[in-house]
Image (tube, rainbow, N blue to C red; front, side, top):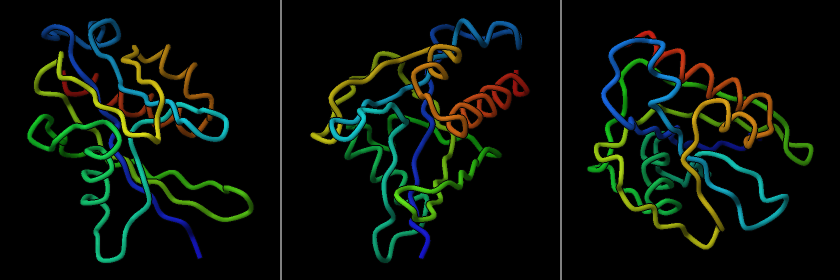
Length: 149
C-alpha cells in the first residue's frame, strides 16, 4: 500500500511584485526542520487520516506543524504538485498546494515534530531541502508565481 501525505508550499511576499524578475528577491518559502531522523527540511506536510480528503490533510498538518490557521493564507488556484518516491522500501505519494501568507510577519509556532523554521528565497530553499524532487517542486511553484506576474 502506498503511503500518502499532503502539505502546503507556503510563501510570503516581502514587497509587491511588479515583474517576473522581481519574484526571486521578493518571495520567500517556509521550510521546517524535523526534530527526528536526519533533521531534513520540508514544507509542512503529513499523513492523511482516515476520512480526510487531501486538502483537509494539508490544512490540518499546516496548522499542527506551523501554527498557521487557514485564515492566515490563501491557496492559489492552478498549482498542485504530486511527488512519488520510496521511503524505507515503501512507495510514498506527497501532494502539495501553493499558499500565500496574507501577512508576511505572521508568527510561526512549531510543533514538537520540528525544531526550527526558516523563510528562504528559492535558491536557499533548494539548497536546504536537499531532495531532488522537493527542489523540483519548489522550482515549479516559483515558475508558477513568475507566470502570474
